[in-house]
Image (cartoon, rainbow, N blue to C red; front, side, top):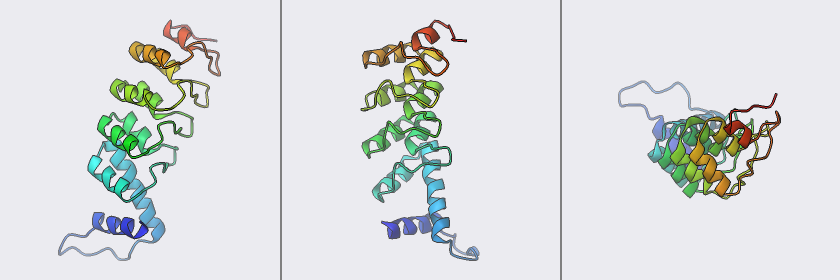
Length: 180
């Protein structure tokens, strides 16, 4: 697989005919860093063909960037439903959390990507999965007035009475009441 990925990188970095080649061959660490950049850029921009190459090469779909984002979190946040489906079908973890504990579902709800949120709700994650502030997807749905999503989360078993670290529940947030 490593040989394939290095070859893949070489193709991506191929120098056009007649151009001066780069002064040195990149190190393995440089090559890995460049692959990570391509991977996250593909997820961020919904480049399914590029993601398909990473999947075919056996690239680790749980790879994280400096903020703890996975490709799935980035694709969901940036509204690329087809890339989300592609990554999920390839085995990306829908329950993965970034460094703040937020999930792809929370990102989709925050951004108003309701189709993506509905797809992620069908994943085998707890509807009450919390971020590091104790917030759940239902709290995000309530806070950002995504009533349909909130109802669907409740139907999937989300507890609307759970409280976050500040003492807010989804029920309170939906009513516009905030704990002090």
